Amino acid sequence: MERVIIFDTTLRDGEQAAGAALNVHEKLEIAQQLEKLGVDVIEAGFPISSPGDFKAVRTIAREVRQPIICALSHANPEAIDRAWEAVKEASQPRIHVFLSASDIHLFYQLKKSREEILEISRDMVARAKKYLSDVEFSPMDASRSEPTFIYRILEAVIDAGATTVNIPDTVGYAIPQEFGDLIEGIFNNVPNTHRAIVSVHCHNDLGLAVANSLEAIRRGARQVECTINGIGERAGNASLEEIVMALKTRNDFFGFTTNINTTQIYKTSRVVSELTGFLVQPNKAIVGANAFRHQSGIHQDGVIKKAITYEIIDPKTVGIPASSLVLGKLSGRHAFKERLAELGYSLSDEALDHAFTSFKELADKKKEVTDKDIESLIAEELRTASEVYHLDHVEVSCGNRSIPTATVRLIAPDGQVLADAALGTGPVDAVYKAINRIIGVPNQLTEFTVKSVTEGVDAIGEVLIRIESGGVTYTGRGASTDIIVASAKAYMNALNRLLIAKGSNKK
Ligand code: KIV
Ligand code: ZN
Image (cartoon, rainbow, N blue to C red):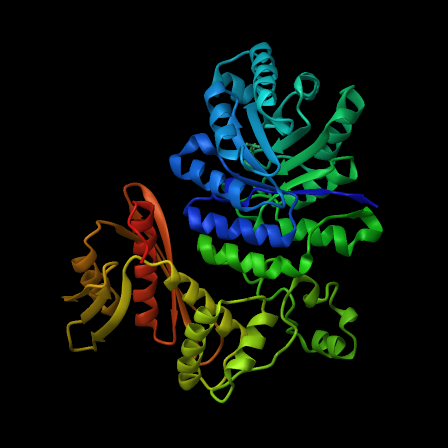
């Protein structure tokens, strides 16, 4: 059976989503999870765009050895040289060169003629080719370009050595049949297409990214570019999990396989959501909280009798834990460890000890500790493992007749204990002001969201915040059964990410 190449661009186009800024450690963590998921290609970043992106691509190229590691590049010599520097230590490096091809972009943005575009594309692919054999080329805004011009560009870049030619629906404008016609047209009109893989890259502005990608596969494309949870510029990119599960579930229709280990899908979705701070909408196909929940009586009745009545995918296939086993305060370290393993976590002994202590504290406050609680608890452990300042103590006093007051105590990277207090308009404001008095990094809170992880008054509350400093957005998350503590942790998490980005050492 023929295989479709899965090209993941979560770390490049996904990270272009407003507010998703990831640091090098977080990008590496996502890349390692993508490797477990089995993606064929990881587009790790855009090295010329910033020193941080360069470093992230180079780190991933060194550490993640199974997939092809790809660096994006403008079609100019400096960007290509920089991309090569970043990616050259990968076990299988790729450079992806792009240049606009639509008259709209040529006229209003680049102010170049088609002939100039053709020449630059050919020359820049040839330049990349001097460094490595695996070169991809994308004529940007292809779906709004003159097809005959796309054919000419593709023929020229394949002759210059491009081994993959990618057709982007950059602004998510295409309709499946029309996009499929474009792909079919390429096979019929570009004489050397047999020397390259035809790829597609669809955006979701009209909610058609997955449909367009699948239609393109039907018409001959053999690589799809996609992101976890569909994150990306504007309305996002085609969602990896939806494409993969459509190909798998409807193999009878498509007849293609992928290398994806689907049981890693749910975990990967959680990791990306956690690190980018983008919550997954509950009704999101495949990975949303409601994707496998049956509410209506008639559906529940059917599923109890035979799951296939209303379930087209077994949740286990995408790695959603099957067990509804609930842990409590009498559960031991062994049961806790087993549950973690079933949820896909393998912690070092030290991290396990720490997580187990947190679990026991939680179990004291909460009668039943569910899988969602455990996931939230582990996420909290991972956050504290990469801190500059640690939140040691937070206390508030508030009420309808008192002025909200907070006292906080932080541990600095050198072990110094720092404490301060502040008044605020509310308890969270007071906590944030007290923290600011200690850390003193100017920033603005731009988003604050609270959600409960499970149902009930004893549920863990998860706080997601975004702060802005020097034009950059940093996301922070915190979880606790106490909303004020969760808010303090989320603020510390965002501040720690800011400090790490600015070069402060972790503890
Ligand atoms: O959407 C787009 O056109 C892109 C290219 C760089 C491939 O992301
Ligand atoms: Zn894109």
